[in-house]
Structure formats: structure tokens, C-alpha cells
Length: 546
Image (cartoon, rainbow, N blue to C red):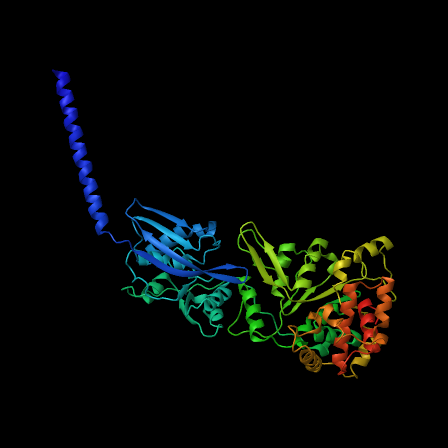
């Protein structure tokens, strides 16, 4: 009897369970029929080197239990946006979704690095739960890192990111207040600066009152370079000044060899002043590289060629660029369209110096990582300075060198032969004597303005001659073009370097570089073509015997 009673209760319980499950299923189906999925959308930029790609950000709030899921190949810094966006939305007086939030960064195969997607994720999230209208600002790019209190932090690389946005067809970009000045340098782009997420939400149409917040600005960034000193401060060393003008006229690489105090650094620092101003495209590229490195840009584009002088303890990553997560440009990339000056060149690690060999030939550097390859421009002029030996006194009158012969030879051989073969001008810079110092007060010295005028005239002649080619300077012209029948010099003019090539004292690369240098010398003299004297002088300047 008891057993039958238990069986009846069990059957009744099963029937009630079936009815409850059937009711839930029916209610779920009815709810699913009425439910309209709301997907919030925003756009941002993914940077890889100087190249940027548009990233579409989608946010969907589902009926599942609370959670946050980000998909689309984000790195660890990008994944941490969950905590920043959640706190920023809450502390801005807005509501973070209580259901599960799924954020998709598209295209999925493109690596997403850094925190510049924070603002776009927050805007898409607010759209998904109806706090701001859907698609309220089309063709708008959002860039910015969120602080936990809802303010927007300025970010590195805002200029190249905004430039990529402009090239993609976007008309408006929203950036932190601290990045407004640099992004405003891009013509034809509407720039909206915001101090906080709440300001952005109001701009998108949210029905909120504005809050006064103190904007965040970058701290500890590298300042803009000082004004270039004048060349007339150089006393004596007229030959070195002339070599500097030749190098600037043709875009030639140069090595200065001399004892400490001879003025090698002083000469190199004045080289940007005698070079032509940057055109708009080059100035934007230089500013973009500075922005990506965290340097100050200023309120206007600088047209002065950049001057980079890394310390001899620099690593390969510091020289050409790198980074485990976000790939940054190195000193060689930041020196594009300008000067890369390596003082005390033999003190650099030999492997670091040899990393410059490829950029010197191609004008670009590619940094390979497991997930991506970043390419930076590297079209710089290399200027090296070196002492003749570790003590620096070898070859100096009235001074005794204490370095053994073996040590002295090994010191200069730290600069590898393949790298030296890419140097067009080798110059010996002696110390200034007391007689030269006294005579300098009475003689007229070359000023930066005078030297620059000569450089501009020589470059103008080269540009006219190369008008139908992709090159604008003699230092860019390949040897195959120089040795073509139309440009080939007469046999007497080539006799000096032909003989050197036969004897093995000149490589084929060196042969072509002497020809480039000879054309620059003829441009400075206003000659139509290089003569025997020009070729002989170019060969002497390459060997350091001029």
C-alpha cells in the first residue's frame, strides 16, 4: 500500500515537472519572437607600424547571465578594456549592462594592440543598451584610452591613427583633449576633442547634463628639438665644412675621424640647418613617427629635418625599432628625412651598427613578430664620428698615443667593412691650432644661410636632371642608372676609379658611390657633367685622403 502511494506521488511530480518545463519553453518561445537584438557599433583604428586599418566594434547585450566576452584577436592590454570600460561607464553616471556583453573587433584576423579601442568599445556598449542613439554619428572614428573615473587619457600614435582614418574616408575623429593639437595638423578632418566619456556620450545625443572635469595631458614626453646652431660658429676646418655641404647636397653618408675636441659633434649638429626644408608629406611622416614614439609634436608641422643622436649603449631595438607587444620605431626610423648621428661609433655594439646595413640600402626597415610585421621608413643620412684609437691621441701632434698597435687596429674594425662600404665620404678632422683660432677672428666664415643656398642650388640641378626618374637626390640614384650609356662619363674621367676597381681597392658598390659623389660635386660647381677633377676628388673623399 505504501509502495503504491509513493509511485502515485512520483508520477504526479513528474507530470507537474513536465507542465512547468512546457510552460517555460512556451514563454521562452514567445519572448524570442518578441525580442529584437540591438547591436551597438563604433569604429576605431588598429596601428601596425605607421599603417592603420579601420576596426569595426560591435557590442551586443544578451539575456544570459552577466559577463563580458571580447573576441577579434585582442592582445592582453586590449582585453583589459573590460575593467576600464566598466568602471568608466559607471563613474560617468551611465549604466553598464547587467546581462552578458559580447564585444567583437572586426576584422577578426587583424591583431588589436593597446588601449586606444577603449572609447570605441564604450560607445558601442552604450548604444547596445539604448543610452545613446544607434548610428548617431556615422563615419566617425573613436580613439582614446579610458581612465577609471571616465576621463580620456592621451595616447601615443594619435597622429598616424587619425591619418589612417582620414585616408579610409572618415570625416570625423574623436580624440582625447591632450591629442587635439597634433590631430588637427591633418587637413580636411573634423577633430572632436573630449575630456571624458560623458562628454562623448552627450555629443552622441545622450540626454545628460555636462560635468566639468579636468582633462588629462601627456606627461614626460620628449620635447621638440632646439633651434639648429649656425655654421659660422665652426672655427677652422674649412675642409670639413665643405664636406658637410657636399654631403647635404647629395644625401651622402659621412664618417668623420679625428681626436676628441676636433669639432666632429659640432659639425654634425649644424647639418640639419643647411638641408632643405621638409615638404608637407615628409613633415607629416616625421611627425607621425614622433607621435608613435611618444614625442611632442607641437601645434604646427616642423619642416626642419630631424636629428637623432642615440647613445652608444643603444640596443638593436632602440636603433631600428621593436617591442614585445606594441612595435615602436627606433632612432633610425625617427631620423627619416634627416640625420642619424652616431657619436663614438666604434663604441656601439657591432651587431647594432650592422642592423643599419639594410635600411641604408632600401630606405625602410621591417620588424617581424610572431603575429605581424611592422614596416617603418628609414631614409636617413648616416653621419658617424670616431676617434682614431681608444685614447684618441693617435696622429695628434705633440701628443703620445698609449694604445698598442693591435688595440688601435681592432678599435676601428668595430665598424664592419660592409657598413664602411656604404659610406660615401670619409673625412679626417684635425684639432684647431692656435694660429687658426687667431686667423678666424679676421677671416670670414661660411654661415648656415650661405651653405644652405649652395645646397639648394645643387639639389635644384639634380632635380632637373632627374625630373623623369623617381629619384630627387644623387645619393638615391642606383648605379645601374649612372652606368647607363646616356649618363656614362667619358673614359678619361673614369680612368681613376676603373683602375681602382681592377686593383680591388674599390668594390662595385664603392664604384657607384664615387660616381654619385662626382655628380654632386659637379652640381655644386654648376657643371653639366663631372670632369676628371670631379671624379678624382670624389674618389679621394671616399678614401679619406682629400
